[in-house]
Length: 549
Image (cartoon, rainbow, N blue to C red):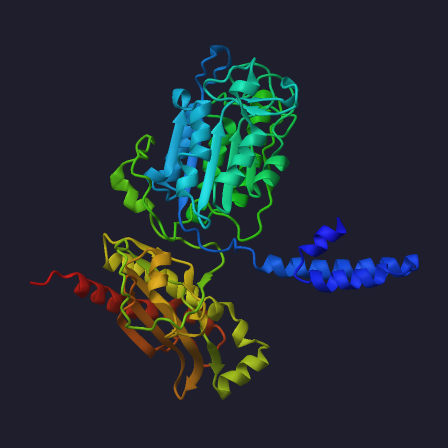
């Protein structure tokens, strides 16, 4: 065994020679143990080097796909459910209308369409293997019955399809182990979320998603099988209940609500915390039973967000009609838009291959919207000698004043609001995808076309606050900020308008050298900066879009 491991290592030659020399003559046990420890150290370091070469899970999500299955009506009417198909339809509707999935990127299979053959074909042959690429996000959601391991002679758990015969699960059910293997081998995405509102427990009642009382699906086994993230509606020993007060399963109802908590910035982990608490409380009050959702993951990377906007959306298959209630092709454009980054600012690596004003040879048509990139700065914070003495006396570190440190975010928020008023009817968003060097200034090496693509926006606005200065100017104090900003064509990388180190200043109304002035700085200066930039940007965009003869 050790020989096989060593032979697969890049240092196999060196290790083999050392091993042969050492094992050619008798060694004390202690020396032998030390030698094997040194071998292990080499192998561990080699594995770490290989780990660095693994595909990054923090890359922007290129596109998003979802297979959504819900079965209320089975061929065997004795196991029919009330709301499973509605659960699936509601979840698919949420994905399209609020989570930025294109309608033709969501396949909804309910009741008669959710046969064993059709479900497996969509996962392993006809659809997901043909559309999902490594940097995409894939969601597989199933709301149905499950079967316990004890119902099968080999101890296999099954998901029940529309045409499953509960007396012949091997021939007609969907083995969970086979499903996970198929997902891993056939679906090429590195981000796969499996959501199962399908309990392997409960009596044969229409409001319990189980066939017989036994153990639930093993979320750990599924997450290991797919290498991704799995959410199950209940613990192994529990029942997954449909609601007694509204027409949905308790788990799916609260899952959708949880995903809406912070809009497109809700992470799956945050949504799960919400779901777990809500489901437990409601089921306990309605049924006097415990139902505790389970999340298991081998995920390594940024927190996943279902509603993140795809960075590089692609068309669906031509023969892939959407079956989503209320979803129209007209709404597709509004849902195939850019990746809105996670809570921490995501950076596009700097590139020296493009520069300001350079037009890309292949222009990709982007949605006619404006993305305001994260404002950066202040890059330097200073006080003149008089103010420096005041700050020292008051034991205040100017670089740590919250009113100053929040200036960039305040500018971004006010700039967004002003542009929405000046450019009514145009979609304007605050993005968190920026260039890597953005926090150090507006670099000529930034790939502006790539920024446009990542933000899926025709226009980009970038703002950097350079120096902030507080000074006593003879008769009064003065707060100053030097600001650089650009309006960029996201399709071509052309800079349509820009300012460099423009001075924005105001004289506070407070007494001279009064530390209370910083509250006024926060209230006034960001607004002045935002107003000046917004007016120029709005004028530049309107001049670009005025039809010419």
